[in-house]
Length: 195
Image 1 (cartoon, rainbow, N blue to C red):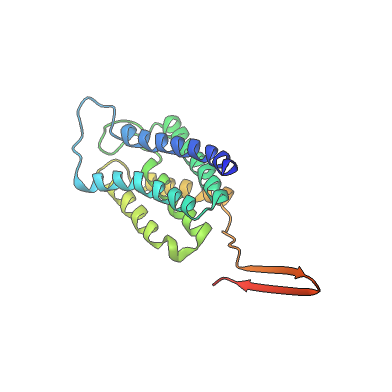
Image 2 (cartoon, helix red, strand yellow; image 1 turned 60 degrees about the horizontal axis):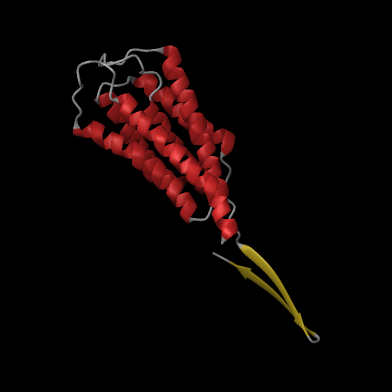
């Protein structure tokens, strides 16, 4: 039990770091101009997906007991956020609604597409379909709310999906087990396969 708790310590730290990064996306995206932009239902839903999709992805990985996958997800997300914010501060592209100059690339899009791409690469395409739908909705909500144009969205998508190519490997489940037991001149060889 103590070994298990020691292994969870880095993961708990990583979850806290991820939550702080995601929270900074929402507050950073609100704008720095004096006039408060109108926030519609489409944008609010996109903001909710920005928080829930990465947390659900990371939580599901932990529930499956895939600590290696959780660490891969965290490394990819940290790279995604570092590249996204580095470009935002380096490029200084004006948003379509003129609220600030942090349009390129879309941080919402890079974050949610990182989650969807991670599920696809780690667990398979059929499990990632709902995540891709949610990620696509979030990207569309950023265009609808006039926070980004198509170039910002495409760059965010490329960053989010690209970080998975560096860190994420296919999940290898233990399907087969070979056992051997012996006692007083008796030997038992067993083979089990999980479907």
